[in-house]
Image 1 (spheres, rainbow, N blue to C red):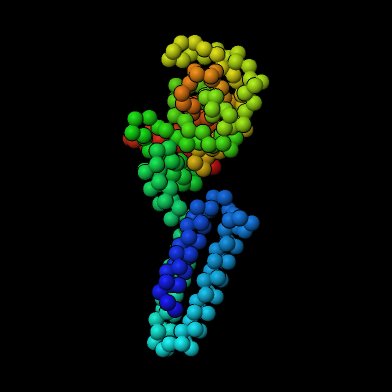
Image 2 (image 1 turned 60 degrees about the horizontal axis):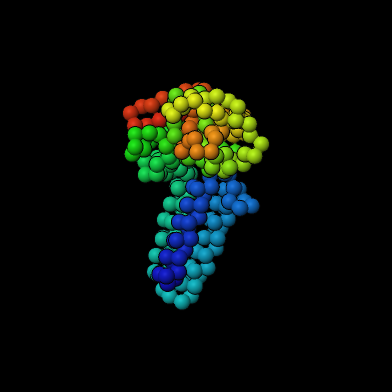
Length: 233
């Protein structure tokens, strides 16, 4: 088997492994489950291996064929080992990305860790009603508070909101609209039916992750430069 073909196969297998790791939490890859996708990728690789080995046997020496067989045995073992320890690999990947990407959460079971940002605050990338919403941890806020843009991303009907809740801010007293969010997800932690407030236009620059979310958790703490959130089992 010519080396360009081998490299293409190796790249294909690496991409399949990356897809399995990335889609592990979702449990699906397109119409297939992750287990079915892994089995499919393995069978395709096996068919290519058998076909290429047969070509080599007929076209080249037996010694060359044995070399290719050994290469594919090593590749197969590496794939099997990687898939067996995919949960540990995902944990390492999440922790690495959490250190490199501000707001990226590293999830281990029901524990989520987030590194402190360069500005000293904990910036979080959350999902509100399925929409991506950046937030800042604010333990002084009694509730989750969303900006107008965040409320739009969450699919909330801004045109019917009633701003009748008095709130105290750094700029004085103002009004906000009370809502109940279907869901807020931080990493692997998801809380549903969370009370929140929507700030009036121009009143808030960044959404706040306040106590109406944190109080839903089993515990939370700041340990050094890391925020640790623990959900109930």
